[in-house]
Length: 467
Image 1: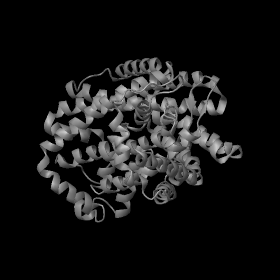
Image 2 (image 1 turned 45 degrees about the vertical axis):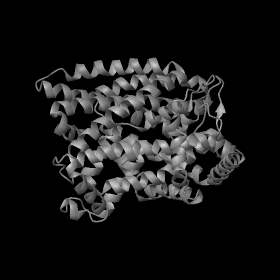
Image 3 (image 1 turned 180 degrees about the vertical axis):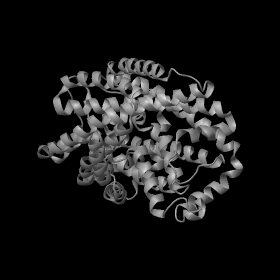
Image 4 (image 1 turned 90 degrees about the vertical axis):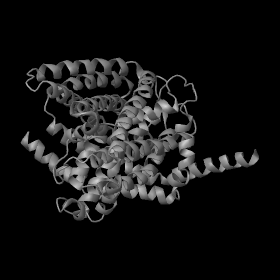
């Protein structure tokens, strides 16, 4: 185990070092420049044609789901424990200024996610069951040509394995951890933790199996209800604390903007350098919204929407909701609450619980965090199940889907009952490895994104002028 851990640490240092961050941000900048800042120019149009139309009833045919169900499935995989635990870690290790760099990463990431979704819909296929399938492996194969199919296969190997760890075992572990925290807050002498974890793991596995074995339509039907509920619960709770501690907001925003460039002036030297602040802000931004990772396009490819650009607008909305809204609320809740964040040390979800406790009482804060973590993590389990299945299908054919799903469901129980330290580290490495093929494809197909976007908006403009 020590050998595996040391090898993984060495690979992880390369995969998530400065070159990877530069590549992720660089592709986002490339798409932003080539599209002339489309995510900014068309931001109002994107919101109007995404969130502005969620109450319009739309029907989806066989093997596809509605555009909103597609983005809900993508958000299910994207909005996870990283929006709470990840942001807490960033703020405590990097200081308030990390939020500024988180925002910068999100604004650039909107262009990346837009491009990924557009390509996923443009180059998708129907499988033998009549379902739409797409994602990096398909826009690599159909966009770059069959000689590049090996690159798509490489993406699928890393993604299918990462799904078992990042999207599954770790999420199950976070759920039981949050439940244990609540139980122990009421009964510190509770001795049945192992049994409780097993029971919770089995319940999660059964619920996931019911959804996953029902196919992509059932998955879409569940996520379109689950995602809005979990988002509203968390957003309302955070807003209540922020408003309650509203007198601290001017100081908090001062600390965010000053701390982004002179961290020692805010944290008293506990945060080492500006490089540390930028790195943590950008890393957590990328981990949070997954722009460039290549996961969400697999969910968006299942949409009934035939126009790639229209679905790609949901990519802009997705990053906005995940990072600009939910992650920002986590950061602001921590900072306005006035609790001791102990800068320079690893953050924990208990800090967010304590922040909520300034309004809802300590036990109330623990319950809210446990509920939100459970919903966030379970939705991530469902979203990543689709990603892993699609990758397995690309590698081995449709017959491999069910065996992979069975393994996936069983891993939930393992994640709920096992120490996941090494699993987390390996999954983190696999996340970086799967991003590489996707980023290569995005850069190579950037011209297709620009051409398709120009044609769509030119047609929209002509239709408006003709009215």
